[in-house]
Amino acid sequence: MTHQTLISLASNYDQEENLHQAHLCLAQILSSCHYTEAIWTEPFAASTKSPLYLNQLVEATTTLNAAELEAALKDIEQRMGRTAEERQKGVVRIDLDLLQFDNHRYHLRDWDRPYIQALLPR
Image (cartoon, rainbow, N blue to C red):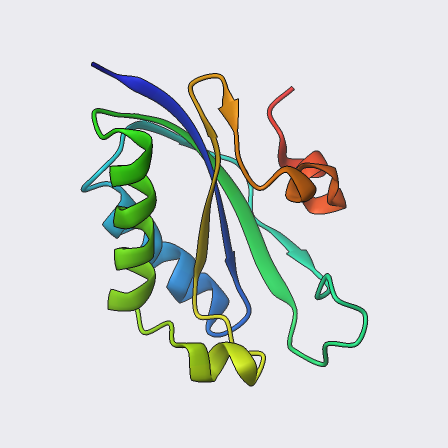
C-alpha cells in the first residue's frame, strides 16, 4: 500500500550540503518526491544563538507504515551525524520531521510556524 507523506527538513550547519545529502537518503525510502523551495529562517527559539536554518518540505509517497517511516527518518538523522550533544550546543545537522502521513497530522505545534505556513503547498 502506498501512503502520502509530508516531511519537513531543517539544518543550521553546512545547511545546503546537509539538505542535499538528506535528499539522497530520502530517495531511498520515498517515491514521487516534490520538494518545496528552501528558505532561510531565524532560529525559532528567541533565546537560541544558533546560525540561520535552511528549511524545506517534501511531499512524497512511501510503502512504509508511519512507525517505519519515523524510524527511517531518525536513522537518516543519525547516519548524517546528528547527536544529542550537538543539539545541546545548538547544532542541527539535519532535522527530519514527519508532518503528515495520509490524513494524520504529526508535530501539531509546528503547523503554525511561519516557515511551515510559507512552504505548505497551496
